[in-house]
Length: 499
Figure 1 (cartoon, rainbow, N blue to C red):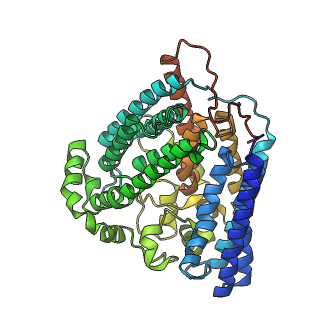
Figure 2 (cartoon, rainbow, N blue to C red):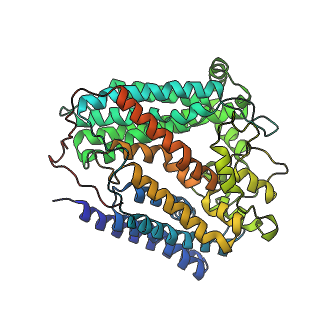
Figure 3 (cartoon, rainbow, N blue to C red):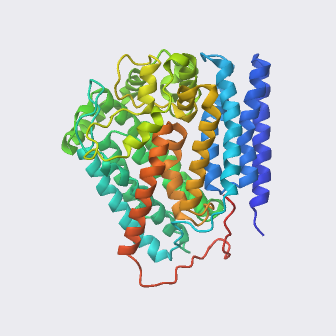
């Protein structure tokens, strides 16, 4: 018998208790009653989603990640700080109303996307353990090669705020690095021996670390680590409860420390000293090593590079939390500055079609995106340039039409996203390397990006992923046609949940 219903009940009950405690503490701190009601409604929706759609459902994980960044995560942090959740925003009532209504829209989008009957998916292939090992190598090196090409040839944001010439298309395929790690980790957990770590995975994570330092971004290493952790959690249910599973958690904790105290500081240091103006791989390597001795000054570099006196929801720790653990204050800033005179209308939709057009077909296509456009329109920046700050679909939709078109825009965008997920992969993350891959690659982007980027992912990035994966599977196909998988944890085949 499946333990999924029990897990759902326990998880929802625990989440309801945590939500009640947070709101109760906020009431004691003196938060406004109307704000408390809206906060409670928005915070309990993630538990409702897990209860209705399951904790191993890719769509529910995407939805909960989004809602956590808008509501639960910032509310928990504010409560731990002993600060009221309705202090530190510019448009408090309207921001909380958008978060509350948005939570309901996400839940509605999940239901609507589930109405459409979808029987077949693009990526359904399952692997024997030896195929997991083989394709792990193939996809990892494919991603690593394209990642290095992206570092070498990608356009660079100049001091003027404009993009230099270059080719950013290689970056579309660097995500296969994560798929290689997912396949290799799935191979590891499928083994019947007591092996807890594999040299191949260690080397893969080291390669991701090097790519992060060369590209001056944290994504490659963070998402590679998440790919490793997500596969351990989702691929074989209950695996982490085994003795060797707990050892993996120890490795994840150690690598997280490496990221916090080594990778992130080095990235922020090289950003602070102007590595964005360095284009070649050899010059980037030199920058990394030249600045590695200054790692203790990373906190100051982070503060200087992220300082913005217009956002102060978290007070003194804003420089660490902005854009990563919350979305509420970025959204609030946009809402407070938006009016009928500076709406952008349908331009984000137009920009999404322009962005997917190759530059050789459209040489004059804009280098800025919808978030850059909105930031200029509401006077966050003084001139039209590439800003690359986070804003989210809620804020972009509000800047398009304000309340008159906000609800249908948000609902349509998220319904389309959940339908696309259902079309490309089975919804059940268990024993499903493809679903884990799309969750890892697009999970954080989904929570932070605006309308243009999300539509671009659906129209260009995901189709390119599917085409490339199917092509690789065709080229390196196994002669063994029996591709049935055994769940070593239970000996039973798992049935996919709806959505």
